[in-house]
Amino acid sequence: MSETPQFNTFDAFEDAGGEAGATSDKVHVRVQQRNGRKCITTVAGLAEDLDIKRICKAFKKNFSCNGAVQKDEESGEVIQLSGDQRTNVNDFLKQQEICHGDQIVLHGF
Image (cartoon, rainbow, N blue to C red; front, side, top):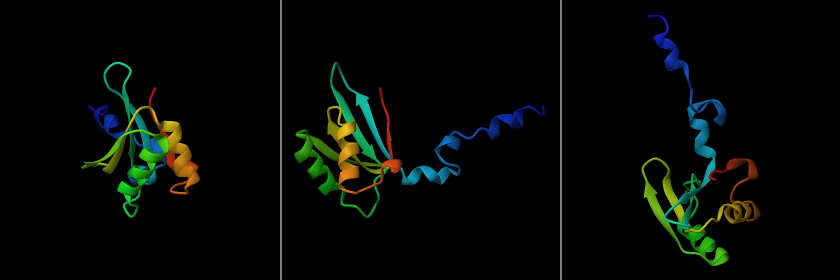
C-alpha cells in the first residue's frame, strides 16, 4: 500500500526549469504534419502585450507563406504558418529582438 504515493511524485515539467509556471515564458515553435508532404508551423507562448496579428503579418510577408492567428484556451493566441518555418521563425524572433534565444523552444521531427 505504501507504493501508491510514488506515482504522484512524478513532475512532467521538471526539465522545464523547476516550478510548473516556468513554461509560460517560453515561446514554443512546433511543426505539425498534415496530409502527405504538407505541414503547419505553430508559434505559441508569445507575450500578451505583443501585437500578435502584426507579427503574423510580418511572418507572412518575410517568409512568403500563408498564416493565421488562432485563439487557444491553454496557449492564448497561436500563430499558424503554412510549411516548415521553424528556422525562419527562430531567426526572425531573435533578429527583431521579440525574444531571446534561450526563450525559444523548437519542436518537431
